[in-house]
Amino acid sequence: MPPPFVTVAAYAPHGVGMLGAGIVSEVFDARGGDLPRFDFALCTDRPGNVRTDVGLPLVVEHGLDRLATADLVIALPWAEFRTPPGPAVLDALTAAHARGALVAAHCVGAFALAAAGLLAGRRATTHWRFAGLLAERHPDVTVEPDALYVDQGPIVTGAGAAAGFDLCLHLLRREYGATTANAIARDLVLPSHRDGGQAQYLATPVPEDSRDERLTDVLAWARENLHEPLPVAELARRALMSRRSFARRFAASTGTTPHAWLLSLRLGRAEELLETTDLPVEEVARAVGFGSAAVLRAQFVRRRGVPPRSYRRSFTRAPTP
Image (cartoon, rainbow, N blue to C red; front, side, top):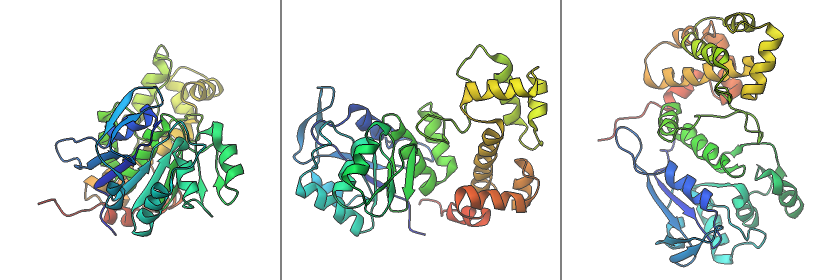
């Protein structure tokens, strides 16, 4: 397995989205402790002041040469996305992919990857508002307008606006594991993972209405008791609701079903235990409420694409000297 990315270069053209630039800068910022230390840089066609989409100047010190050496290259969204970047940028994106770099984009940054030909024959997403335009301009791309992000191996695209966080955290989870992604998400006060589409469904959310204390308390109790079966009837009883009322209130508050919420929570906890402990897979399965290693394996393969033991091997790394 190749080592995870360390050097990160984000392309910021004139008109770059201030939110997009802020997202990648925050996620790949220098942090202490055991968290990865990224070599992050914004780069542009000509270093200097770059105009942002809100009119404020952004000082970008690096040129396109940073794209030639980065492990992860990100095309940021920009205001004039309907006009493709210049040949030098497209060549740099193509060369990055050809040499094996991980190439990503979120929001309308996907238009740059499409213009470079990197999305041809692949699935991709972008901001839902411009998904139709991307599909019209690039019929060789299968556009998924409802996805928060689409992972196609060496090419990953994300949805619009704040979904840039989802894209970056997914890349961290994929390359560094759930423990690292969760730690950085906590530092940013973000949910570590969101399922569903651009409707912003949360995988392990809390109710949006903080006044619904009964539901909040039940979800907190469920997190602490994942080893239990946790049927919906039991959760509803603890919330002092009928099963139907509980399911309706749960969906209204979290955007998903109790079953999907619990499944995502259990898989996330299983990832952490596989990464950070030597517990046998059978014990991990029991600790998160799957009951047996066979059930855990089936869910892991279906949702994560690899069996638990392979996942554990992938994220058992030698200590950094």
